[in-house]
Amino acid sequence: MIHCLVIDDSDIIRKYTRLIFESLGFRVSEADGGIAAMERLRSEAPDFILLDWRMPGTNSIELLGKIRALPTNERPYIIYTVTENDALDIQRALSNGADTYLLKPYNRQIIEIKLQEIRAAA
Image 1: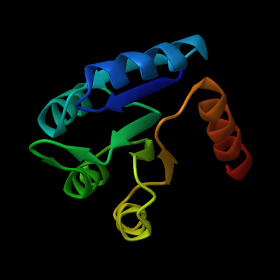
Image 2: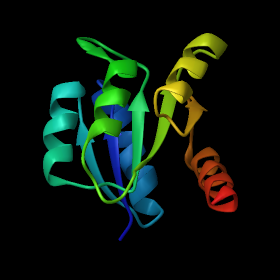
Image 3: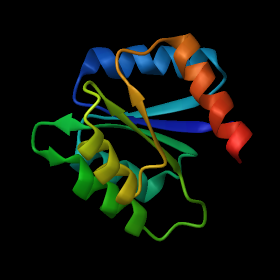
């Protein structure tokens, strides 16, 4: 089963995203910030990571680097989720390990389109 880790400080966003991905047949785990994400990544190897761009106490760009530095056999596909279309921040994320980005708010249809784009590019 394909596994997705959702890293977001908002309980509502994590639960909403969980429902979308579970309805698409994914196994989903959650983390509310950088520390919890790194703890999960020590024991889990997700196929996809949705990473929120701004979380209290977490620098998402630094977290990207830490995730990419982990010794893993499989490289998770990281989707950087943003609420503003800030080209500089998005470019910084892509330069530091994000594979793509997704603008919030999103819904199931948008997630499905993004996943189709990812599969088509692979």
